[in-house]
Length: 305
Image (cartoon, rainbow, N blue to C red; front, side):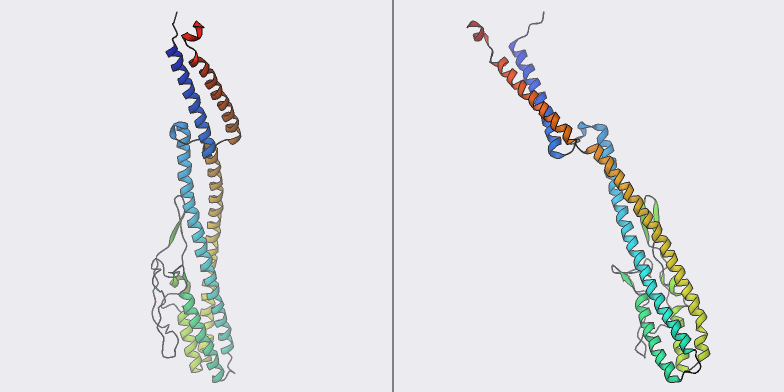
C-alpha cells in the first residue's frame, strides 16, 4: 500500500494550483489581447496558417496600391488624350473655315493666330505630367518629351524632330500579372516624317495660311482625320486597360475580404466562450485555494487535540 506523506500532498497541491493558475492566465491573456494565438505553442498548426494569411494579405495590399496607381495613371492619360482630341477637332474646324476661297488674307491671318495658340496648347498637352512624371516619354519620364524652343514668332518651333522613349511602364497588379499602362508620344501624336504627325500638320496649316494657299490648307483635312482616328484608338486602348485593371481591383478586394475572414477565424479570440471559460477557471482556482488551505493547515497537532 502506497504511503501518502504531507510533502506529497503539498507538492501535488502546488502542482495543481500552478496548473489552474496557468490555465486561467492563458485565458485572461486571450481576452486582453483579443487573440487566441499569442505564441506558437498555443496552436502550432494555426500559427502556420496565420503567418501564411499575413504574408498573402501584405502582398495583396501592395497589389491593391499598384492597381490604384495604375487607374490614376490611365484615367489621367484618358483625360489628356481627350484634351488633345478637342484641340485637334478645333484645328479641323478652323481648317474647314480657312479652306473657303472667299476668305481674304486678313481672315486667314486671324485664323492663323488661333492656330498658333492651339499649337501652344497642344505642346503643353504633349508635355503633361502626373506626380512629376511625363506621361508620354516612356521610361524616361523624368525628361520632357517635347522640349521645343520658342521661335521668332514667340511660339514653339515644332519643326524639331522628336523621338520619344518607347519604353513601357509596367505595373504589377497581381501575382505574375504585369500591365503596361503608358503610351508613348510618337504612338499618339505621330512619328517624325509622318504626314499626319500633329506638329507637322500645325506647321503645314500655318504656312499655308500665311501664304494664302487655300488648297494647301484643305489638303491637311485628311491628315487631321487620320490623326483623330488614331487618338480615338489610343483612348479605346486605355479604356480596355482601365476595364481590366478595375476587374483586378474587384478581384483583389474580394481576395482581401476572404483572407481577412480566414485570418480572423484563425487568430481572433471567441470572447463569449472565453468569458464563460474564464469564470469557470476562476471558480476552480478559488476552490483549489480553499481546499489547499485546509490540507496545508492540517498537522499532527490537529489530531492530538
